[in-house]
Length: 265
Image (cartoon, rainbow, N blue to C red; front, side, top):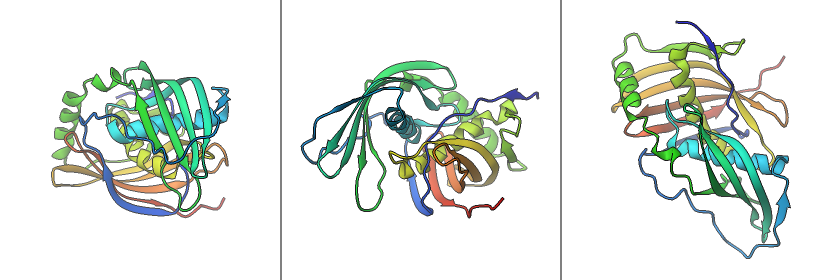
């Protein structure tokens, strides 16, 4: 099958050593998107230029969060436009951003306007930003279950198991059959992105350096991967080892994520 060019999707990811956990979501549980803590009385709001880096970095956290909730081989979210943004100090605990923006559902190019709050906690051990999204409805109704189930059944019994490198290749090309796995790796790496995001990070997922399918366990497809990210702020390319599972019923679950040693040269 021929190759076609793939446009890189922007995602946010920080650095912070290793993390081992069992984290994931169950698709279809479309409850209001998690709450933002309101710990102390807020200070006066400051209006932001929606094209300024403060607004853009906060907005990227929104779609990273959505990808941890709903991302799959056939569903992935990206930022289209930030219409307005404010920021305010919340006592000594952190800063809260309020945004009006439009979100894009990448595979279909469908868009929808919504509002969001992102709270970055200050002080102590770094914790993931708290995110609340309001008004996102139509994009969540896009049906992907039939395609997901077909992919799952195909690879559940695959022999030999999938093993692929360099998605996309150095020219930005990718076999169309591998595009669902590119989306799946972005969804899985979004858990790292969310846990490591701060007001001072802005990352792309540059490449899936390797993706190896492991034997199916508990009806979950299992993958070991090496992900390359690009920090636009520092221009560094951190490498993360990511072990995760996926099924249409259970969604993405990250089993282990560990930053790899920095390469010299």
